[in-house]
Picture (cartoon, rainbow, N blue to C red):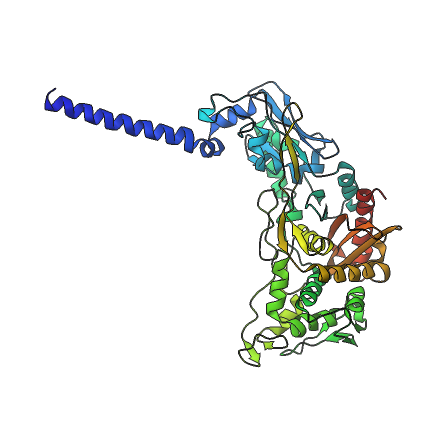
Length: 501
């Protein structure tokens, strides 16, 4: 073989080897990434020309299915309950991609995981008929009660099992009809999306876990937990002075109690009365910024909750309160910092504190579950076409917010808020119910506020079985639209349905 021919053979071998390596890289190592790419029209065409798995609630209510249709695609996604599960199931659209469970569990629903494929090599051996059916943790009856009770008011309702983290109800109003976005009529889908995006109330946003709000006095549960866990607050001390207001150091601006009322005393008393003056002093001076930040982050603030839904928002507790002034360079409780007045406000859920309804439900869940916050989730299990379970959600701890003894004390304090405090409208005969109300004032002309409540319930003498968080947004009339008056009846109805009371 002459020199030129040998050179040609070597070049061809190198090129062939490079081509072989690149093909294997694409077909094996990048197959999943390329399949999921938004610009992969072949994958999109494939997905719309075969049925996806169903989505159902834990009690068997069908939430999503594929139906045969005529036209460009053989199948179209259908959501029999319309808006009721839109913020959980989401949608899948040829025009806009996927959202919600349809997005997070797309591979399972499309039969693209190892459990449903014989081989992932270039999708040659996919079993088109065997896809995954997703069972949600949500209970249909409880979800319906959440929607019914909130009515046409803006807001969110979250109910979950504190022991597992499984979501029982997840509702936000306004919602949207996912059928309008999932239609194979692409012009109609575009028109529907444009209309939804034009609404100032943002119906496409999953406000239960993607939007943050001032939590108001519900945050006093976090302040209480931080105090108890630090050992600086107990059931019996300190006793805060009975007052109508508290003026933090370095400012003349006072923090007043709701309605100008007088309150004070020990933890159980000030929590039942939702005493702004006492909790502002507790956070600012009894505890200080380090303990408050650690306490808030122990429940998940300044982090995104690991829920199996897209893009959960991070709830915020501010961390910077400036330099220590008195005494200088100190980090001990009782130290005055440059921004101690802001810490006093933050300790009662004001200043720059912001939380999703899910986050506040997780606060209540941590108290209810002996101080442990479980990972929140909406998937219960995934089954094959024969009904066999091929995957269950791997339940586990997310955070240890406080020790079990502190959690037990705080549970009793929250039970007291229902028995003789601001959350009395949440009481359920025959059950042990704990709660904390909140009224986050937004403006004065006209008076407007968010009405909140968080809490838990279970059999008398037993463990809490259900946790709830309710937010009713932007209620006009500050004095009469409190969490105890507006949100508590909603929470009670949801708890009653979940408990079978």
